[in-house]
Length: 432
Image (cartoon, rainbow, N blue to C red; front, side):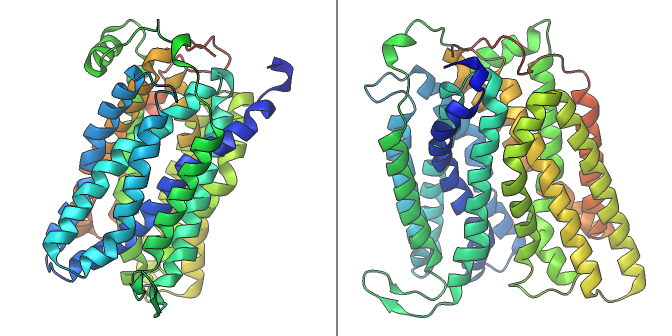
């Protein structure tokens, strides 16, 4: 394609690939919001429920890198990622749709289905993510990542603001039976299957014989090479990813409870807190890719990290001042939501541009390896952070989680200052 046309010729393809991300954005918020409710019908301990809720992160830590590397080495008539996408995502959809029905049978059935759901979902995630850098030239991956993150953000809005409302619908439908506290899950499962059909029908991977000669590097050998190389940029980006996810995942699980216990919101309204992040995510994902293309990925990420530090400090101060002023009021809530909207705008800018920096350093044959390393570090943070933040909340109150997040973002800002590679203007080592 003519380089003067820029990213525009790749936009339709990227949009179609984005349907894979739509599936994840649709399922994740429903899972996070309602699985604790299903488990709570059988389990009284919040600690045990929290342990079950970390299963997805534990599986992600191992399954995403493993299947990503396996897909790097896969050669089929329909491509190297597609076989996993068209088998694992429909299996995920079936398990997800059955989740509330399993909850109505027994705890053992529910746990077994949660186990299977997370195996399929996390195994599918790596090939879904790696499909984009396989298809889009390195110079335009920030813009492309913005498009697919927008698709994920739209799906999150559909899940949290749209489908979640259907939990209260009380009907009896053919095949589905009673719909009370169930209906969003089979509908989401159906939409996932539709998205998979669209991806399979319209996205064509590069032919296997074109990349057969690419070097295949094992995951741990690749990480060892990164750590031992003279240029530590990839390792520093991975360290930054761990730090900023440590901060983000420390706040995310407690936003709902903060809204109820500190702001006096109802269970239904408190979901708007995470919804504000999702709305900003969808609105700013695409622009953030274009901004990074103009000003540089590293500079854009560092500016956004500095802004995230400022936003978290503002929320921390608002929380402390609000606690001294007494009961929460509408103004305090709207200011909180406004700050979360800003958080979402800068957060998606970091996420949109960090993946392309890593992909810029990968070869075509190791794209899945670098995708797996990204998730290894981000999911390790997702596992470690909630207990750390929970302990701080127990000791110092909810405001501590905002201070913790600010410190993590500041540390990531400092580490990113030493990164030297990963810009769109560099010659990408992957074959475009």
